[in-house]
Image 1 (cartoon, rainbow, N blue to C red):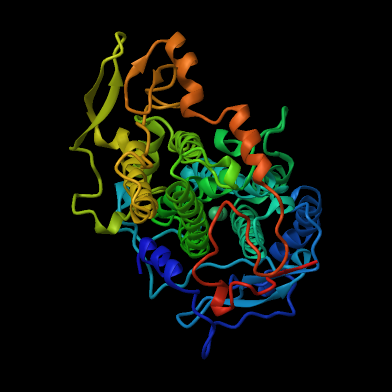
Image 2 (spheres, rainbow, N blue to C red; image 1 turned 120 degrees about the vertical axis):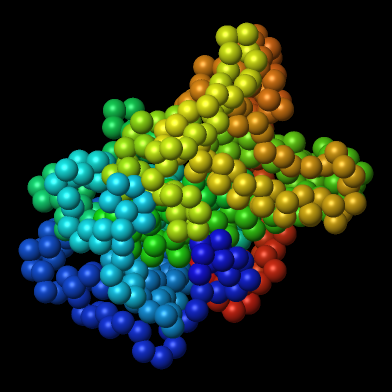
Length: 494
Ligand SMILES: [Fe+2]
Ligand SMILES: [Fe+2]
């Protein structure tokens, strides 16, 4: 099953329930796992000593809304028949486990200079620091988003949405566990130190911020949260997709399992924005105006501004269009391309070129030819952009259904818009791709990015709705509930 199939499956129904035999997980262990922790006392002790620090971090920087229990999915096993259990769980008692996907037989490296060799079960000495860096950068994003989202519980538009927020949060916590396991199990002392640092850097902290820019921005409200889960969790999907190809087998199998959970996060984003747009379209059509704040809905122009911001922040996460690091990671077999196995080229790329954008001094946009190996960040970003377009089509359908005419549309801005990384950094590019001078950018930026005023208006709508079946005015209820439960189920209890 491909990752987009998984995401589609998530859109049409719940993940499969355990049915029949699944891999055996010993629940008497403190850390549910399928990595044989019980037989490795040293590693078990290392993780058990990290666990209290994790729980302290969760108490201090995890969800700030006190709750009694939440209806949550918990990864409990790997198996063809199911992998998760569903239950009401006090969040601090969530079982954050460690799981690697299971494979049929040994796997071979599928690209780069080690292509065809058996995948590595241990870290090759010559790639140790590069692999550690890749794991740390991925690991750092997981707790960061929990920190960014910690206050959103106070203003949830429904119990259904509140539950989805908490589901995303606990699973990002589990993804941190997945990366910390790799650091402890394979990188000795420096791995343990890095695992500690993952809890000491904090989103937006002036002295020890998270590693990547988008993870230091504030998630100010639920519109911003849904945009985050659509655009930024989707960046995560693509990064995990490249690490899933890694020659380092434990990393590959960790990321493959994480992708299953990630599908739900993107489901939250896709349907969250869709429900907002559906309500916006409905109110615009009924009232015959796009000034709909006073009717308790979010104007389309404001939705577009939030989209512009989150999309441009997320494009920065792909790094520079040309990168010798990306080339080196690929050649070494550490990080592949999206769907490497489906590519029909030689998987080595030493004799191929690619086009990358250039901005000339006079502001003209053009392209230049570079070795394809150095353009792999752009290759991944292009895959991502195509995937983003699919959601936009769904959202625009809501506008079509309301009969609003061709001007009522959401669009992705030009990839050069509002960028801080890569060739467009330092240039001012409009959403339609015009290069502007500083003065014009300053004059018009408020038409394209959320202003303090926009955020204030959105904040005015963010009032909690905690009665089962009750929903805020600015979005429609979901079509179905979670795991076949009714929409009005009390997914969270206080
Ligand atoms: Fe994650
Ligand atoms: Fe995620």
